[in-house]
Every structure is written in structure tokens, then in C-alpha cells.
Image (cartoon, rainbow, N blue to C red; front, side, top):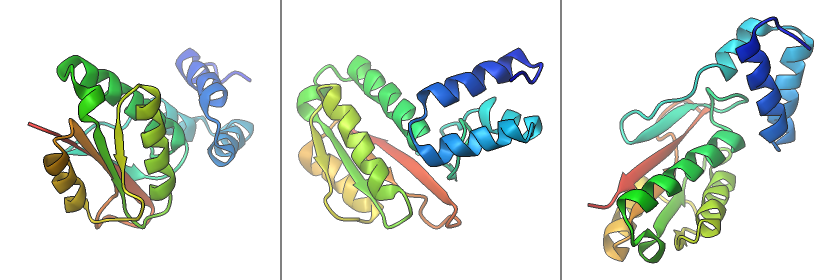
Length: 167
């Protein structure tokens, strides 16, 4: 397969190598088979950017949308960042919450696992909760950070990754 765009071909190859979620992998494979390079460029050649308090966008395949792989990459980056700015993050821990949106529960568990694998203590809500509970948890537990998987009042196709750093 060649789109005659080296950057796009590289991103397609990386996506198919790294993404372990069959739904999003198949969505990218389907676009490749259809030679829909315009959509592949949109999904793979740009990344979500942190806005006010975090990431929020449509759920789907590619670097530009919320999915298992972008949650993994974001959390790995956040863990690395926290270790540089808060040397005691391993003991302080992080608070992780989620709402009732599609994928929120799943992604909260992925986030928790990544922090545990990074040797950072995790306070993970067992049931969905409102965003202020995570903020309260960060303060009450003196955790280094809180992550809430939610898109609040945005469309049902969206989800988000909100971050609160303890100060």
C-alpha cells in the first residue's frame, strides 16, 4: 500500500502496528482499502491538542480522535511529565474518575493500569462520578494529579480526558 505520501504511509503503518483495538484498527484498514487518503490524512496527520483542562473530541480511529491508543499515549506522556515536575508523584498518586459515557469506564481502567505500570499509586473510582469528585479527591488525598474521563455536556459522539494538577 502506498498513498504516495511518505508521512501518511508512515502514520498508517504505525497506527496498524500500535493500535490493539480491533474496531479502530479495522476502521483505518477500511479507509486504506477505499484509498480515502483525505480522511486518513485528517485522522492520522494531526493530533488532538490540550485545550482548557484537557482533551475533548469525537471518539473514533486515528491520532485526531479519542480512542484506546490516544488514551494510552496521552497517559504515558502525562506520567512522564508528572515524574519530572513532582518527584514524589509515585507516593502522592493520581485520582482517576469516569462518567457514564461510552468508553469512559474502559479508558479509566487503561489510565489506571498505565500509572500502576509507571509505579505511580492510583486512586480509581469504582463507579461513575461527577467531575468535581475527582477535584475533591485530588485535594483530600493530596494526590499529584486527577484525570476525569468525560466530555461533560458535549455531543454523545465525544469523550474527553480532563486533567487537574495539584498545586
